[in-house]
Length: 106
Image 1 (cartoon, rainbow, N blue to C red):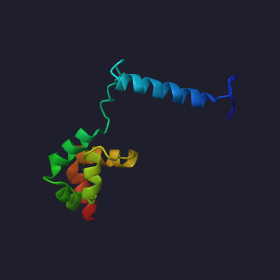
Image 2 (cartoon, rainbow, N blue to C red):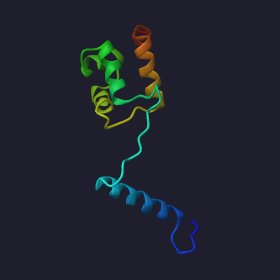
Image 3 (cartoon, rainbow, N blue to C red):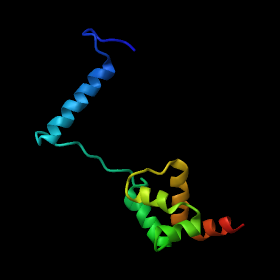
Image 4 (spheres, rainbow, N blue to C red):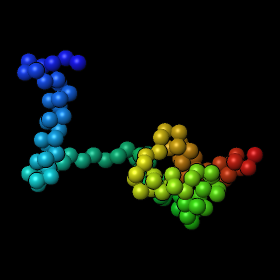
């Protein structure tokens, strides 16, 4: 870890700057930057939409696809984010739910 001329690390300076910006935003002095998530982003809303498309509840989704209801609830509430493999599985369930159902029966 290298130190800058004033004895602080670059990481320390970056963190200090980030917290200063956050504090200014919380005081209403600045607007926070926003960005649009990519079209295929697995947002909580998208997870919920996929689940509702194929099952009436998280328990029913669990019975059909063997993904725990608690896990789905965490994704839908934004407490957890699906990893890449789960994102792919949810995308396949969204597009071809019967294929996944058949694969799970075998």
